[in-house]
Length: 290
Length: 291
Image 1 (cartoon, chains in turn cyan, orange):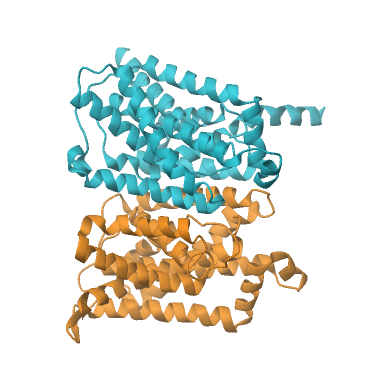
Image 2: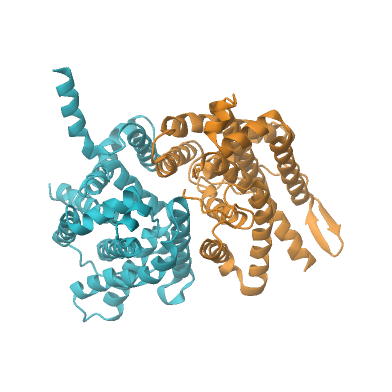
């Protein structure tokens, strides 16, 4: 029984961390910008937090976490100023480049043991720490909705040129959301580092930011809680279906990948607003039938 | 110096071959096809499976290339055609191609396993040839030759044939092309066939050159390919060609002068600088493309 709880505790922890990461992608997505730098931001946050805990043991955990969020946020400003002038696919490509440069930096940095990374980080993250961080992120993003800033972000998403004509400072808004996303990704990195005992550059490759994007899109980016729903769904589902996959003779790794891909394709083709738009769609169908 | 240049041309020819297909689809649809690298990987595995089934290489290569082309058509049908006409098709197309890339990678992982696979010994005669002061293996020369021939064929096809004109017309304006009687859906499907076939050919040649194929082999080339098509100008086939060789040479000389740990970083530095300073690349159109 205790084993069972422990297994689920870890699963819940990953749901929370993945939820934070999906929200970090959502932060820029909600003003129409596809930024894929978040694995890099996460790496900066994870390494910052882990280095503080390992090299300065007296510092309280909360301060290490704050530094995890702050460091990537500071990096996001000089990155965002030139890069946010680019639009659409070009922004995505530039930010992918940034993420890879960060990863290669840590691979080549001897102080953090290069490709091996930092190990034996004390486990300081509890389930409630993650829950609190997630609640905080949801609160901030939820309050944004319906506020003056929230409307400005929606205007930028729909038509940036028109938004500028209305006197909205589009670069400032986009930069603010990039910084917020960086802070969330860094926070998630710090939490994960103190949950899994280790940080290595391999965990922050291109595939990581793809996972975040997939979860945000599957959950739905029309609602601020959508990315968390997507993260929960895609983190729990492979565990639930693991047995079924094994019975079909599929190894867990490829099976999880396949599920991710197939679900993402189905959602983008048939459910463009994500899983959170399902209830609305059922309601409309029921009304149509009546 | 001569040796370095030769190595650069060799690596560059594979980059160019990969990127030419990548940029062709972007030119036609304005969508970044992130499944291109997965097709690259699948083609390498298909060629390996054919060689393992005792087919000679000269037969396995074209068969794998044709299979890659067909995968491209399937990809277009499943991930791109249903999205056509949707307002946000640039971003949603990118995401749906990512979904297909994930599915392809899962298939490769399930069938071939996560370990590195290799071509059996003696797949290609092991011979070294001296050119001036530099030496190259016969395989390297054949790889450069094959890629150059394939890229020349593509260029001619786009310039001279009816299909090529149709593809270019669709790239210019799908609507105008349709009014002029071009079957737009067919032209796009053929563009995908050509693009994926070339990407697949690059995969097989890459697999032969380094003789190690794993399900994530496409990942590194994918990001290099991005650097190449940005440097060459998004959508420009000659640009991708030139930029592919340029990146190969830059990489080799970086390794020689700065050390191997900078090899990957340099392509991202190039990508970054071009995007900031000259987003339309070397050969792209100067008009800002709001992709």
